Amino acid sequence: MNFDSITIDQLRAAGSLKWTTFPDQIGMFVAEMDLGLAPAVRDVLTGAANLPGIGYRSTADAQALAAATAAWLGAVTDFSPTSESIFAVPDVVSSARLAIDSLTTPASPVIVPTPAYMGFTQLIPAMGRDMIEVPSVRRHGRLELDLTGIRAGFEAGAEALILVNPANPTGRVFTRPELLALADVVADYPSAFVFADDIHAPFILDGEYVPYASVSSIAGSHTVMALAASKGWNIPGLKCAQLVVTNPDLVTRLQPALGWAAGTTSTIGSAAAVAAYTDGRKWQAAVVDYIRDNRDLMMSAVERWPGVTMEYMEGTYIAWLDFSEAIDSGLVSQPVAKWLGKHAGVAMTPGALCGRGYENYVRAILATPRPILRQAIAQIEQALGG
Image (cartoon, rainbow, N blue to C red):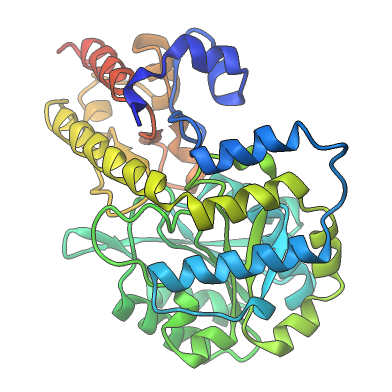
Protein backbone atom coordinates (compact mmCIF):
# COMPACT_ATOMS: atom_id res chain seq x y z
CA MET A 1 0.00 0.00 0.00
CA ASN A 2 2.05 2.89 -1.32
CA PHE A 3 -0.03 5.90 -0.35
CA ASP A 4 2.84 8.22 -1.27
CA SER A 5 2.50 7.44 -4.98
CA ILE A 6 -0.79 9.31 -5.55
CA THR A 7 -0.17 12.72 -7.12
CA ILE A 8 -1.96 16.06 -7.22
CA ASP A 9 -2.45 15.66 -10.98
CA GLN A 10 -4.22 12.33 -10.43
CA LEU A 11 -6.43 13.84 -7.75
CA ARG A 12 -7.40 16.78 -9.93
CA ALA A 13 -8.13 14.46 -12.85
CA ALA A 14 -10.56 12.51 -10.66
CA GLY A 15 -12.73 15.63 -10.64
CA SER A 16 -13.89 15.72 -7.02
CA LEU A 17 -15.09 18.87 -5.27
CA LYS A 18 -11.98 18.91 -3.11
CA TRP A 19 -9.56 19.18 -6.02
CA THR A 20 -11.53 21.20 -8.57
CA THR A 21 -13.06 24.03 -6.50
CA PHE A 22 -9.67 25.74 -6.14
CA PRO A 23 -7.72 24.37 -9.11
CA ASP A 24 -4.55 26.30 -8.27
CA GLN A 25 -4.48 25.30 -4.59
CA ILE A 26 -3.75 22.16 -2.56
CA GLY A 27 -7.13 20.84 -1.43
CA MET A 28 -7.33 20.41 2.34
CA PHE A 29 -10.89 21.59 2.99
CA VAL A 30 -13.15 18.59 2.26
CA ALA A 31 -13.22 15.69 4.75
CA GLU A 32 -12.33 12.89 2.38
CA MET A 33 -9.12 10.95 1.86
CA ASP A 34 -6.70 11.12 -1.04
CA LEU A 35 -5.31 7.66 -0.34
CA GLY A 36 -7.09 5.44 -2.84
CA LEU A 37 -9.53 2.62 -2.17
CA ALA A 38 -9.33 -0.59 -0.19
CA PRO A 39 -8.97 -3.60 -2.51
CA ALA A 40 -12.17 -5.11 -1.09
CA VAL A 41 -14.11 -1.98 -1.98
CA ARG A 42 -12.52 -1.73 -5.41
CA ASP A 43 -13.58 -5.32 -6.12
CA VAL A 44 -17.20 -4.42 -5.38
CA LEU A 45 -17.09 -1.47 -7.75
CA THR A 46 -15.42 -3.31 -10.60
CA GLY A 47 -17.72 -6.27 -10.09
CA ALA A 48 -20.77 -4.03 -10.31
CA ALA A 49 -19.67 -2.88 -13.76
CA ASN A 50 -20.16 -6.43 -15.04
CA LEU A 51 -23.67 -6.88 -13.66
CA PRO A 52 -26.70 -6.86 -16.00
CA GLY A 53 -28.07 -3.98 -13.97
CA ILE A 54 -27.87 -2.23 -10.61
CA GLY A 55 -31.26 -2.46 -8.98
CA TYR A 56 -32.73 -1.42 -5.67
CA ARG A 57 -31.43 -2.96 -2.45
CA SER A 58 -32.92 -6.33 -1.57
CA THR A 59 -33.85 -7.70 1.83
CA ALA A 60 -30.67 -9.77 1.69
CA ASP A 61 -28.64 -6.61 1.00
CA ALA A 62 -30.21 -4.91 4.01
CA GLN A 63 -29.51 -7.87 6.26
CA ALA A 64 -25.90 -8.11 5.09
CA LEU A 65 -25.28 -4.43 5.82
CA ALA A 66 -26.79 -4.64 9.29
CA ALA A 67 -24.82 -7.77 10.14
CA ALA A 68 -21.53 -6.34 8.85
CA THR A 69 -22.04 -3.09 10.76
CA ALA A 70 -22.82 -4.94 13.99
CA ALA A 71 -19.82 -7.22 13.54
CA TRP A 72 -17.45 -4.31 12.93
CA LEU A 73 -18.71 -2.43 15.98
CA GLY A 74 -18.36 -5.54 18.09
CA ALA A 75 -14.80 -6.02 16.86
CA VAL A 76 -13.57 -2.50 17.66
CA THR A 77 -15.61 -1.77 20.81
CA ASP A 78 -17.44 -3.57 23.59
CA PHE A 79 -20.74 -2.44 22.03
CA SER A 80 -22.61 -5.23 20.26
CA PRO A 81 -25.98 -4.03 18.97
CA THR A 82 -28.24 -6.53 17.26
CA SER A 83 -28.67 -6.43 13.50
CA GLU A 84 -32.32 -5.55 14.08
CA SER A 85 -31.28 -2.26 15.67
CA ILE A 86 -29.30 -1.12 12.61
CA PHE A 87 -30.94 0.82 9.76
CA ALA A 88 -29.60 2.01 6.42
CA VAL A 89 -29.68 5.72 5.56
CA PRO A 90 -28.06 7.64 2.68
CA ASP A 91 -25.80 9.80 4.85
CA VAL A 92 -25.31 11.11 8.36
CA VAL A 93 -26.51 14.71 7.91
CA SER A 94 -29.82 13.80 6.29
CA SER A 95 -30.39 11.20 8.99
CA ALA A 96 -29.82 13.87 11.64
CA ARG A 97 -32.61 15.85 10.02
CA LEU A 98 -35.03 12.93 9.98
CA ALA A 99 -34.20 12.10 13.61
CA ILE A 100 -34.71 15.67 14.81
CA ASP A 101 -37.96 16.00 12.85
CA SER A 102 -39.25 12.67 14.18
CA LEU A 103 -38.22 12.91 17.82
CA THR A 104 -38.60 16.55 18.84
CA THR A 105 -41.27 19.20 19.15
CA PRO A 106 -41.50 21.28 15.95
CA ALA A 107 -39.36 24.41 16.11
CA SER A 108 -37.62 23.39 19.35
CA PRO A 109 -33.94 24.40 19.45
CA VAL A 110 -31.03 22.02 18.99
CA ILE A 111 -27.82 22.02 21.05
CA VAL A 112 -24.58 21.91 19.07
CA PRO A 113 -21.27 21.84 20.97
CA THR A 114 -18.74 23.93 19.08
CA PRO A 115 -16.50 24.05 17.20
CA ALA A 116 -18.70 21.78 15.14
CA TYR A 117 -18.87 20.09 11.78
CA MET A 118 -20.16 22.61 9.24
CA GLY A 119 -22.83 20.22 8.03
CA PHE A 120 -24.58 20.58 11.37
CA THR A 121 -24.05 24.31 11.83
CA GLN A 122 -25.69 24.77 8.43
CA LEU A 123 -28.39 22.10 8.85
CA ILE A 124 -30.05 23.38 12.01
CA PRO A 125 -30.79 26.92 10.75
CA ALA A 126 -31.90 25.45 7.42
CA MET A 127 -34.49 23.41 9.33
CA GLY A 128 -35.91 26.61 10.82
CA ARG A 129 -34.55 25.68 14.25
CA ASP A 130 -32.62 27.83 16.68
CA MET A 131 -29.14 26.46 17.21
CA ILE A 132 -27.83 26.71 20.75
CA GLU A 133 -24.07 26.79 20.36
CA VAL A 134 -22.15 25.56 23.39
CA PRO A 135 -18.45 26.31 22.99
CA SER A 136 -16.05 23.69 24.27
CA VAL A 137 -14.03 24.53 27.36
CA ARG A 138 -10.35 23.91 27.88
CA ARG A 139 -9.49 21.73 30.83
CA HIS A 140 -6.35 19.70 31.47
CA GLY A 141 -4.87 20.97 28.22
CA ARG A 142 -7.68 19.69 26.01
CA LEU A 143 -11.10 20.77 24.81
CA GLU A 144 -14.00 19.24 26.73
CA LEU A 145 -17.77 19.46 26.56
CA ASP A 146 -19.29 22.27 28.60
CA LEU A 147 -21.87 20.30 30.56
CA THR A 148 -23.16 23.43 32.28
CA GLY A 149 -23.79 25.03 28.92
CA ILE A 150 -25.46 21.88 27.60
CA ARG A 151 -27.73 21.75 30.63
CA ALA A 152 -28.64 25.39 30.06
CA GLY A 153 -29.55 24.50 26.49
CA PHE A 154 -31.99 21.85 27.64
CA GLU A 155 -33.41 24.25 30.20
CA ALA A 156 -34.00 26.68 27.31
CA GLY A 157 -36.22 24.13 25.60
CA ALA A 158 -33.85 22.07 23.46
CA GLU A 159 -34.83 18.44 22.98
CA ALA A 160 -31.87 17.35 20.84
CA LEU A 161 -28.10 17.40 21.25
CA ILE A 162 -25.69 16.64 18.44
CA LEU A 163 -22.58 14.86 19.67
CA VAL A 164 -19.71 14.17 17.26
CA ASN A 165 -17.24 11.60 18.56
CA PRO A 166 -14.46 11.47 17.48
CA ALA A 167 -14.91 15.19 17.19
CA ASN A 168 -14.80 17.09 13.94
CA PRO A 169 -12.93 19.46 13.80
CA THR A 170 -11.01 19.24 17.09
CA GLY A 171 -9.88 15.61 16.90
CA ARG A 172 -10.99 14.82 20.45
CA VAL A 173 -11.92 11.25 21.31
CA PHE A 174 -14.16 11.56 24.33
CA THR A 175 -13.45 9.26 27.27
CA ARG A 176 -15.93 7.00 28.99
CA PRO A 177 -16.09 9.24 32.10
CA GLU A 178 -16.79 12.27 29.91
CA LEU A 179 -19.58 10.45 28.09
CA LEU A 180 -21.08 9.12 31.32
CA ALA A 181 -21.15 12.65 32.72
CA LEU A 182 -22.97 13.83 29.59
CA ALA A 183 -25.47 10.98 29.88
CA ASP A 184 -26.26 12.05 33.43
CA VAL A 185 -27.13 15.53 32.18
CA VAL A 186 -29.31 14.31 29.31
CA ALA A 187 -31.12 11.85 31.59
CA ASP A 188 -32.53 14.78 33.56
CA TYR A 189 -34.61 15.75 30.50
CA PRO A 190 -36.97 12.87 29.57
CA SER A 191 -37.95 14.38 26.22
CA ALA A 192 -34.34 14.83 25.08
CA PHE A 193 -32.32 12.65 22.74
CA VAL A 194 -28.73 12.61 21.52
CA PHE A 195 -27.83 12.30 17.87
CA ALA A 196 -24.38 10.69 18.10
CA ASP A 197 -22.35 11.12 14.93
CA ASP A 198 -19.61 8.49 15.12
CA ILE A 199 -18.60 8.61 11.46
CA HIS A 200 -14.91 9.12 12.31
CA ALA A 201 -14.81 6.09 14.63
CA PRO A 202 -12.39 4.20 12.34
CA PHE A 203 -9.74 6.87 13.01
CA ILE A 204 -8.52 6.44 16.58
CA LEU A 205 -4.94 7.66 16.71
CA ASP A 206 -4.58 7.55 20.50
CA GLY A 207 -6.79 6.24 23.27
CA GLU A 208 -9.99 4.22 23.04
CA TYR A 209 -13.13 4.71 21.01
CA VAL A 210 -16.23 4.42 23.20
CA PRO A 211 -19.63 4.82 21.51
CA TYR A 212 -21.83 7.14 23.55
CA ALA A 213 -24.75 4.72 23.19
CA SER A 214 -22.71 2.02 24.93
CA VAL A 215 -21.75 3.76 28.16
CA SER A 216 -24.97 2.94 30.01
CA SER A 217 -28.48 1.68 29.43
CA ILE A 218 -29.72 5.21 30.01
CA ALA A 219 -27.44 6.60 27.31
CA GLY A 220 -28.53 3.88 24.92
CA SER A 221 -32.18 4.61 25.58
CA HIS A 222 -31.93 8.22 24.38
CA THR A 223 -29.41 7.84 21.53
CA VAL A 224 -29.67 7.69 17.78
CA MET A 225 -26.18 6.72 16.68
CA ALA A 226 -24.92 7.31 13.13
CA LEU A 227 -21.87 5.81 11.49
CA ALA A 228 -20.67 4.89 8.02
CA ALA A 229 -17.78 3.41 6.09
CA SER A 230 -17.63 6.60 4.04
CA LYS A 231 -14.80 8.25 6.00
CA GLY A 232 -12.86 5.17 7.10
CA TRP A 233 -12.73 3.64 3.63
CA ASN A 234 -12.96 6.78 1.50
CA ILE A 235 -16.36 6.20 -0.15
CA PRO A 236 -18.50 9.27 0.73
CA GLY A 237 -19.81 9.46 -2.82
CA LEU A 238 -21.49 6.05 -2.53
CA LYS A 239 -24.19 7.39 -0.17
CA CYS A 240 -24.63 4.75 2.50
CA ALA A 241 -24.62 5.23 6.27
CA GLN A 242 -26.18 3.41 9.20
CA LEU A 243 -28.24 4.35 12.23
CA VAL A 244 -28.00 2.30 15.40
CA VAL A 245 -31.12 2.65 17.58
CA THR A 246 -31.41 0.22 20.47
CA ASN A 247 -34.54 1.70 22.08
CA PRO A 248 -37.65 0.18 20.42
CA ASP A 249 -39.71 3.24 21.34
CA LEU A 250 -37.34 5.49 19.39
CA VAL A 251 -37.50 3.10 16.44
CA THR A 252 -41.29 3.32 16.44
CA ARG A 253 -41.19 7.11 16.52
CA LEU A 254 -38.63 7.21 13.71
CA GLN A 255 -40.95 5.32 11.38
CA PRO A 256 -41.88 5.86 8.56
CA ALA A 257 -38.78 7.99 8.02
CA LEU A 258 -36.55 4.93 8.40
CA GLY A 259 -38.36 3.19 5.56
CA TRP A 260 -37.94 6.19 3.31
CA ALA A 261 -34.25 6.48 4.16
CA ALA A 262 -33.59 2.81 3.49
CA GLY A 263 -35.24 3.13 0.09
CA THR A 264 -32.91 5.97 -0.91
CA THR A 265 -29.70 4.26 0.24
CA SER A 266 -27.35 3.26 -2.57
CA THR A 267 -27.21 -0.40 -3.55
CA ILE A 268 -23.54 -0.16 -4.48
CA GLY A 269 -22.80 1.91 -1.40
CA SER A 270 -24.38 -0.75 0.76
CA ALA A 271 -22.33 -3.51 -0.85
CA ALA A 272 -19.15 -1.46 -0.56
CA ALA A 273 -19.81 -0.83 3.14
CA VAL A 274 -20.24 -4.56 3.75
CA ALA A 275 -16.92 -5.22 2.01
CA ALA A 276 -15.20 -2.45 3.96
CA TYR A 277 -16.42 -3.59 7.36
CA THR A 278 -15.76 -7.25 6.60
CA ASP A 279 -12.67 -7.43 4.40
CA GLY A 280 -11.21 -3.94 4.51
CA ARG A 281 -9.92 -3.81 8.07
CA LYS A 282 -6.25 -4.49 7.26
CA TRP A 283 -6.18 -1.71 4.67
CA GLN A 284 -7.91 0.70 7.03
CA ALA A 285 -5.48 -0.09 9.84
CA ALA A 286 -2.61 0.82 7.51
CA VAL A 287 -4.38 4.09 6.71
CA VAL A 288 -4.68 4.93 10.41
CA ASP A 289 -0.95 4.34 10.92
CA TYR A 290 -0.21 6.57 7.92
CA ILE A 291 -2.45 9.35 9.18
CA ARG A 292 -0.92 9.15 12.64
CA ASP A 293 2.46 9.87 11.05
CA ASN A 294 0.89 12.71 9.05
CA ARG A 295 -0.46 14.15 12.27
CA ASP A 296 2.96 14.04 13.87
CA LEU A 297 4.51 15.67 10.82
CA MET A 298 1.93 18.46 10.87
CA MET A 299 2.30 19.06 14.59
CA SER A 300 6.07 19.33 14.26
CA ALA A 301 5.62 21.83 11.45
CA VAL A 302 3.09 23.95 13.33
CA GLU A 303 5.51 24.25 16.23
CA ARG A 304 7.75 26.21 13.86
CA TRP A 305 5.00 28.57 12.68
CA PRO A 306 4.95 31.87 14.56
CA GLY A 307 1.63 32.56 16.24
CA VAL A 308 -0.05 29.30 15.20
CA THR A 309 -1.13 26.36 17.37
CA MET A 310 -2.80 23.03 16.64
CA GLU A 311 -5.08 20.92 18.80
CA TYR A 312 -3.68 17.48 19.55
CA MET A 313 -5.52 15.00 17.31
CA GLU A 314 -6.58 11.97 19.33
CA GLY A 315 -8.69 10.84 16.39
CA THR A 316 -10.01 11.73 12.92
CA TYR A 317 -7.78 13.02 10.12
CA ILE A 318 -8.68 16.65 10.79
CA ALA A 319 -6.35 19.33 12.14
CA TRP A 320 -7.78 22.35 13.98
CA LEU A 321 -5.41 25.29 13.67
CA ASP A 322 -5.53 28.53 15.66
CA PHE A 323 -3.93 31.57 13.97
CA SER A 324 -4.96 34.08 16.66
CA GLU A 325 -1.48 35.20 17.66
CA ALA A 326 -0.37 35.39 14.03
CA ILE A 327 -3.34 37.64 13.34
CA ASP A 328 -2.68 39.79 16.41
CA SER A 329 0.92 40.29 15.30
CA GLY A 330 -0.15 41.31 11.80
CA LEU A 331 1.55 38.34 10.17
CA VAL A 332 -1.75 36.89 8.93
CA SER A 333 -5.01 38.64 8.12
CA GLN A 334 -8.63 37.52 8.35
CA PRO A 335 -10.28 35.52 6.99
CA VAL A 336 -7.47 33.05 7.57
CA ALA A 337 -8.61 30.53 4.97
CA LYS A 338 -8.65 33.22 2.30
CA TRP A 339 -5.19 34.41 3.35
CA LEU A 340 -3.83 30.85 3.14
CA GLY A 341 -5.37 30.36 -0.28
CA LYS A 342 -3.90 33.59 -1.62
CA HIS A 343 -0.46 33.52 -0.01
CA ALA A 344 0.21 29.80 0.49
CA GLY A 345 -1.88 28.17 -2.24
CA VAL A 346 -3.57 25.86 0.26
CA ALA A 347 -7.36 25.55 0.60
CA MET A 348 -8.64 24.98 4.15
CA THR A 349 -12.04 25.34 5.82
CA PRO A 350 -12.80 28.71 7.46
CA GLY A 351 -13.19 28.25 11.20
CA ALA A 352 -16.18 30.62 11.21
CA LEU A 353 -18.22 27.86 9.54
CA CYS A 354 -17.70 25.74 12.66
CA GLY A 355 -19.40 28.18 15.03
CA ARG A 356 -19.26 31.67 16.48
CA GLY A 357 -15.92 32.77 17.88
CA TYR A 358 -13.72 30.64 15.63
CA GLU A 359 -12.91 33.23 13.00
CA ASN A 360 -9.18 32.89 13.72
CA TYR A 361 -9.19 29.14 13.04
CA VAL A 362 -9.04 26.86 10.02
CA ARG A 363 -9.76 23.18 9.55
CA ALA A 364 -7.24 21.11 7.56
CA ILE A 365 -7.61 17.57 6.22
CA LEU A 366 -4.46 15.51 6.69
CA ALA A 367 -5.60 12.32 4.92
CA THR A 368 -3.42 12.99 1.91
CA PRO A 369 -0.20 11.50 0.53
CA ARG A 370 2.78 12.63 2.58
CA PRO A 371 4.56 14.31 -0.34
CA ILE A 372 1.47 16.48 -0.83
CA LEU A 373 1.31 17.27 2.89
CA ARG A 374 4.99 18.19 2.86
CA GLN A 375 4.37 20.49 -0.09
CA ALA A 376 1.45 22.17 1.70
CA ILE A 377 3.59 22.64 4.82
CA ALA A 378 6.42 24.15 2.79
CA GLN A 379 4.08 26.57 1.04
CA ILE A 380 2.55 27.70 4.33
CA GLU A 381 5.97 28.15 5.90
CA GLN A 382 7.09 30.25 2.95
CA ALA A 383 3.95 32.40 3.28
CA LEU A 384 4.67 32.88 6.97
CA GLY A 385 8.16 34.03 6.16
CA GLY A 386 9.93 30.84 7.14
